[in-house]
Image 1 (tube, one colour):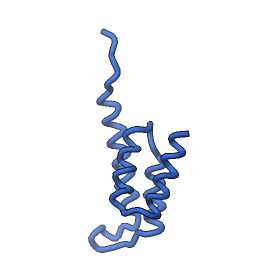
Image 2 (image 1 turned 90 degrees about the vertical axis):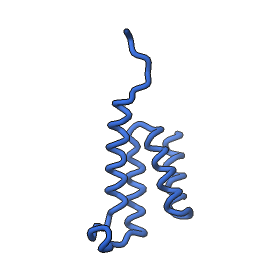
Image 3 (image 1 turned 180 degrees about the vertical axis):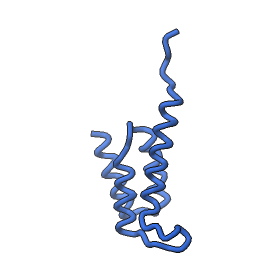
Image 4 (image 1 turned 60 degrees about the horizontal axis):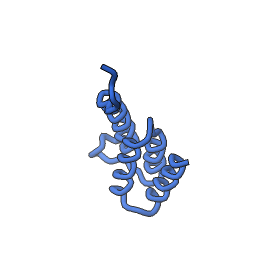
Length: 89
């Protein structure tokens, strides 16, 4: 239920709030939830709505989608490496 609510909040923030708010909310959601693919989907939709290809981004139309995908992979890797649960000795 909380995951669905987070997706709806991200969807509304994509439509009505500045981009940097969406980036921060998605980053924290990717840390909080287990494999938050919805964040990558939000950036894909954002690129479809607002994305334009420029020479600065090497003519990649889905630039923030690829950044979000890379960010998800890195966060999930770090979550596995930084396991804070108590270990048996």
